[in-house]
Amino acid sequence: MADFLKIPDDCNLRLTSDIIRREADLIKYMNKIWQNYEKGMAVFDNCHSPTVQSQWLALKDEIGEFVREPNLSEIWDIVHAAGRLLYKLIGIPLYLLAYPTVRKHSQRFEEYGCIRSLRNCEGKCCGKNS
Image (cartoon, rainbow, N blue to C red; front, top):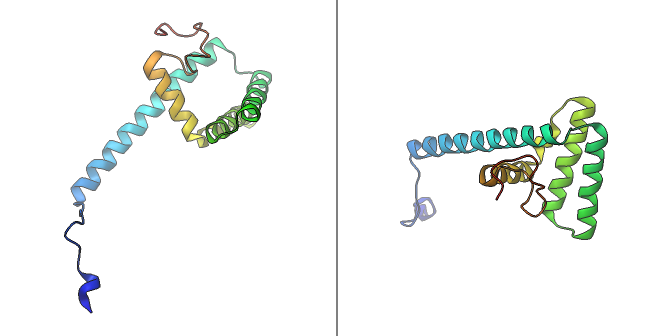
């Protein structure tokens, strides 16, 4: 009857120190994502002024991309663009809810200095673009 309480031999128990170490690594990772995203968006916004009109056009472009090629990534891009537009209107950074897009922009900026894909980067904003 007590067999259901027995811990299987192949079970990997985590020590508290392992959990704390991974949590610290996660915080470091999230900080790195945030810093790259923040820098990348600042560079992009410096080159492409984030007006209400430009944010509206970006949202319409993202919706158009989703209509042409529906996928989950495009939905996150729409949420990000809508959040950026709302940020211009009400000042609440709702764009951060679109974590997959935030992470994607962060990684791109770290890799080649632009938040946009290599296909769409115009090369105006970054010096590292190759």
